[in-house]
Image (cartoon, rainbow, N blue to C red; front, side, top):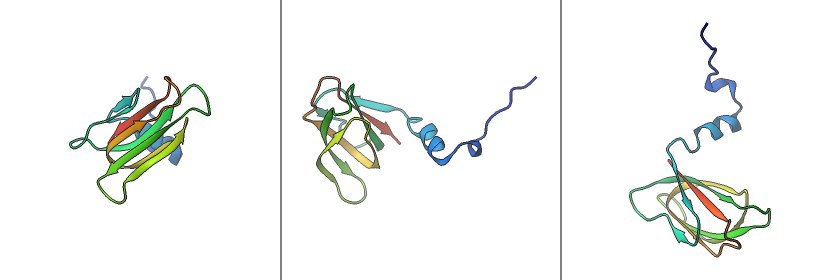
Length: 103
């Protein structure tokens, strides 16, 4: 007997977005540095850490619109945009990482 498949319409908007995010892969920034510029396009980045108050400073260049200048973000923050380069500086802890999603 064939197993029933759940179509994309069976998910809420948030669940569908989560299913799509990351399907093109990702790059992880584990310390101060950047993703590199040019050929890659990132659609979002997520700040991770072991404590809710962990944070880092992020700057990002975009292909459309204003660039994101050095802003502080805490663990759990997810930012969407057409990023061509994402730069992390000033992580508060060694376990603060930035997951940069290709798109």
